[in-house]
Amino acid sequence: MTKPSTPAARTKSRKTYEELRSARWMAPDDLRSFGHRSRMMQMGYAPEDWAGRPVIAILNTWSDIQPCHAHFKDRVEWVKRGIHQAGGMPIEIPALSLAENFVKPTTMLYRNMLAMEVEELLRSHPVDGAVLMGGCDKTTPGLVMGAVSMGLPFVFLPAGPMLRGNYAGQALGSGTDAWKFWDERRAGTISSEEWQGVEGGIARSYGHCMTMGTASTMTAIAEALGLTLPGASSIPAADSNHQRMSAACGRRIVEMVWEDLTPDEIITEASVKNAVTVAMATGCSTNAIIHVIAMARRAGIPLGLDDLDAIGRTTPVIANVRPAGKGYLMEDFFYAGGLRALMKNLAEKLDGGALTVSGQTLAEGFETARVFNDDVIRPLSNPVYHEGSLAVLRGNLAPDGAVIKPAACNPDYLVHSGPALVADSYDDLKAIINDEDHPMTPDTVLVLRNAGPQGGPGMPEWGMIPMPKALLKKGHRDMVRLSDARMSGTSYGACILHVAPESFVGGPLALLQNGDIIDLDVPNRSLNMRVSDEELARRKAAWVAPEPRYGRGYGVMFSKHIMQANDGCDFDFLLTEAGPKVPEPAIH
Image (cartoon, rainbow, N blue to C red; front, top):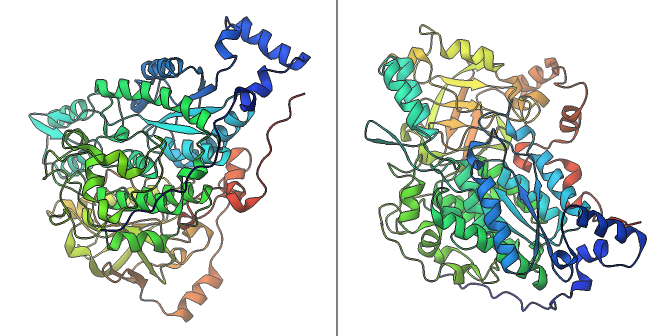
């Protein structure tokens, strides 16, 4: 068993009220603070609400069009209750909601906007710590990235997965079963009535996806990083344990402020490695790679694709949860013991001495955990898949890397060669996949380009390319598909994603032509096109850059500063090394 590190003894002394950030606004006997206090009183507060107390921001990503966070109107009241119980003053502040299902072209276009908003909300207001309420795919990394860059004590409160879906007595998993039934619908094997039944039964409660999609992956990563209370990421949104956990977050953040327990003490090389290891063991979403790189680098940890691949090679998948697993969903995972139980089974691969927001080490947080169903949470000796969930590929088609999820695709395609069939846009792709007579075979490699960070724009989840009708009608349900886009974490199939550099900026994918043979070798982590260097140089010289996607507004800033997928798609000016730490605001 790997010996856990021992956290260095904390040297910070307990804070006094005069040392709190909020006291800069509220305590001085001057005209400006008079204005702050009088306006607080305008809202009905009295000095007893703030004097001698930490002020805690609750960043709430609720909105009327955010189904994953529909319960946050209620949960924020439980957080406030906990803050009051511990002697703090709660202030609720709305933050960008990023409803995954509805925001177009993609929420990924706005993840960094949320991160910037979080950082500036915390910096500009008289707050001493924060509870971050999120869970839908991009809200977890966006909230964490911004809060880490600000550096105040914070606790992340996961939204929790929804209840398992149901249709005709069959358990349904959000996303995963949608793609499966959509292929059958297009193949003509299910009726309109059955399709409508699936539509009405696949998402039965508030909460995020109950498969091990991006949402569950990212909240698990947040817990493994030490940013949640122990076990918080596994609790179903509709379970009363979620209300109690919300209040506990409120109580704990008040103590964290007095203890001055800041994210730089929690997000370390050890905790980042723990998070990647846990993610791989859960059968994580491919999106995890982009987000965990961005989160780590905000904390000054230089995580890269090769680091993730190395951990993946030695970490088996032990969470038997769809889509990498068979049959089970997050509700079953919770009943089986949840993430604490998975981490206990994984203990020999974790640094249990990493500090968490609870004030305890990671190992102390899962010490009493038990596995109640060893088919849902497997031991290391009986994994779902022998290696981690994700693999990083490189070659002349993806010199800066590409990603595949081997555990969720047909093993026949792990080593594959076939001719490229290229679509330059999603509209072109739809024409191919909807043409029942389009000439192709199961060996064809279906390619979508101009769908990356700049080309999408925002790198949409277009990489979960539907199976073409021409193959569906012949009984085929998988093929190699390749793009510079992302795919939903609830998806499955032999999909190669995140090809970098992307085609829109002139990466090798832009030079691929119909009929070029693509060689995929997942065991050897290679992805190449059989085109000579001389021919690629000739094609590169003839390549013409596409017109920019934006002429004004946020899109221009995005296009100028977005980094490629292998670097986490953060803005270059937001990285830790981009410049000196932003000072506290002057109060005059």
